[in-house]
Amino acid sequence: AVVGDGGVTIAKRSPIPVTTGNRYTVASAIEGALEGARLMDIVPSEATLAVVGATGSIGRTCAVALSPEFKRTILIGRDIERTKSIANEIGSKAEATTDIAAIRDADVIVTVTSSDAAVIQPEQLKRGAVVCDVARPRDVSVRVAKEREDVLVIEGGVVEVPGNPDFGFSFGFPPKTAYACMSETMMLALEDRPESFTVGKDVSLDQVEETQRLAAKHGFKLAGFRSFEKAVTPEKIESVRAAAARPVGSPNPGAAQGVKRLG
Image (tube, rainbow, N blue to C red):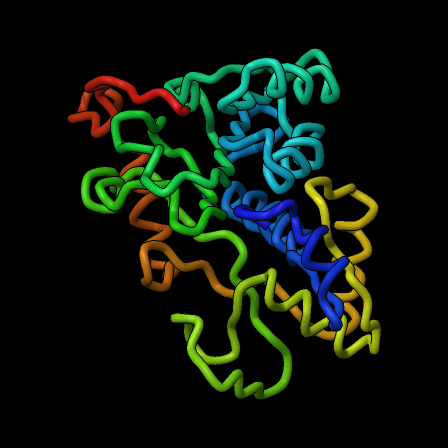
C-alpha cells in the first residue's frame, strides 16, 4: 500500500485477489484511539484530536471518522494544499498544517505516516496525551517511552484472532495476535470472498463499517494494548494517569526543547 499504488497494479496482474488491509487497520486505529482516551479519562467532546499523516488513506479516514467525536481536529501532512482539502471536507472545527509542533495542543493523536524515521519526539507532547501509533516503522521516538512517563503511547493495528491459529511464522506479537491488515485477509477467507477487497488510496467509512461487521461476526477484536514491544498493563496505565495528574508546578517532562517539521 505504501510503496505501490495501493495495490491497484498488483490486483490487475495477480492471479489471486489482494488487499492492502487498510479497511481493518483504520477500524482498529479508531477503536484504539477512543479506548485510549477512555482509559486516560479524556472526554473527546471536550478534547483536541491530531492526525499526523492526514493525507494518507489511513490517516484521512481516521480523521473523517474521529473528528465528529472531538471538539477540535488538527490535521498534519506534508502537502499543505492536500491537508487543507481534507480539513475543508471535515468542516469548521478542523485545521491544516505541515508543522508537527502543532500536536503539542492535542489530547489524542493518531499518527500514521510513511516516514522511515520517528517524527514525534518527547518535547512535542502534551501532559496526559494519548498517542495511537499505527505506522510501521513506528512514528513515535523510543525517547518518549524513556522520558515521558505522563504520556500513553499505544500501537494501533494489533488484533486478537479468534480460535487457536498457527500462522506458521511470528509477527513479533503474543500468540493469537496479528496486524489488522493481515486479519482482514483472514476475514475474507472465512467469508469465502476471494476478491480484491481494499485496493487504491481511498478508504470510505462505509468500507470501514463493513469490515467492523465482519470482525464482530467472526470474533476478531482489538488486542490488549502494546507499546514499544511491551504489553500495556493496567498498572502501567495507572502510572501514566498518576504522572499526568501531578501538579503543574512539578517538573514538566513536556518543557519545549525545540520542534521538528514533518516533510
